[in-house]
Amino acid sequence: GFFHRLKRKAPNHPASHTNNNITSNNTDDDDNNNLGEQPSKPTRLPPPHTSKTTANKKNEKRLKKNRHGFGGKSAKQMYIEVDDAAPPLTDTLRANIGECEDVFGEKVCDQVFAKLWAHKVNGLIDIMQQLSSSITAHGMGKVLECIVFAVKDALLSRREKVVEKAISLVDAALNEFLRLSLASSAKKDTPPPSSSSVDAMIGVMADDLMTRACDVGARGDAPSTALEVLRKMSVCSLEKVCAICLKPQKVTVHWKSGRGQLVVIDMLISRFDTVSGKDHSNARTQVNLSSVVFGIAPLLRHAKGEVRTKAIEVVVKCLKINAKETKQSWGLHEKHNANIIREIGRRL
Image (cartoon, rainbow, N blue to C red; front, side, top):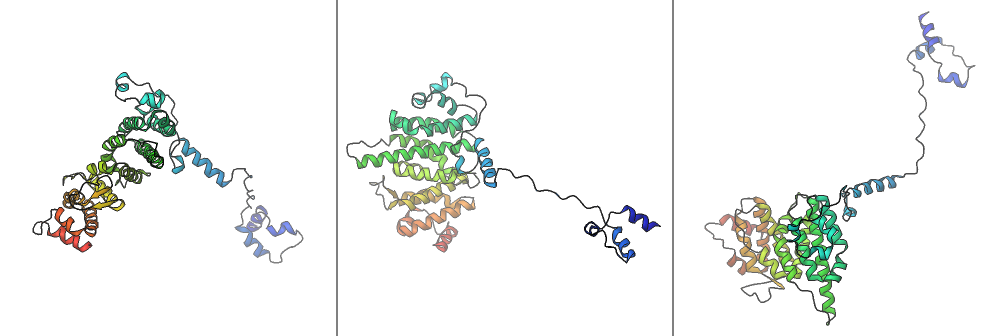
């Protein structure tokens, strides 16, 4: 009674669909097997074929990122979508930006000196796009002077994207300066571009670039780009870079500024020739070793371990160049600085 009623309600065994004439002699086994059988689920068909391949989807995602102004290296020169145009400059601001409007144009300056960070990024990109034509029309000196005004304002921004674009703009300007310098050296009748504008740019940016050169927590390529810009500045005017970057810091200086200075000094003694003693006659092509050690000495006693470690590393390199000159300039005494001297000797 009960099992037979369950059998009538339960679906047929799959085998019965193929051959209805086959019957089982053991009805008890069939009853037991059919008790737990559930209705078969319909077969799920594969999704319809679409024309978008995996590569197309990735490209579409990348382009979507680029439209919003972030992403990988391919998105560096992408503009950021802004609903409203940048407001016009005030008379007070226009009087403090030199000849920027004459060189870059009114709309570009409205963006560069606007309060909204997206406008600043788009304006800096516009300057990079028209850099070659601006140099041809107005000359390298005037363009570099105007870039100093634009970069000085952009470096005050709290947005990393604005600072990154400002550093990239300076990098592009230095590339053009070096290109014209090489071209003038090849052609004797072409005068080389003046380095006075580069000196002004170094004076504005060097301290901030030293800090950003060691900013390990920064996103993107800002630290490496900042160090590369300082290297190119050194090629243009090594004497000016050394005058700023080799200036002795206080022991209580912020650790980022201290470590940034050491990163730059390490780059200088690795990329350029060094000269010992008080000889400053070749300051435009050589780095004075005694000035290097004198600038590093306070950082050997810094409270931050990362700064002390980097300072000892640079001192060891100086000892390998000229041990006598280094020991005469570092100002360490065996009685008061025994631990520092011992650590330097251990790493030597």
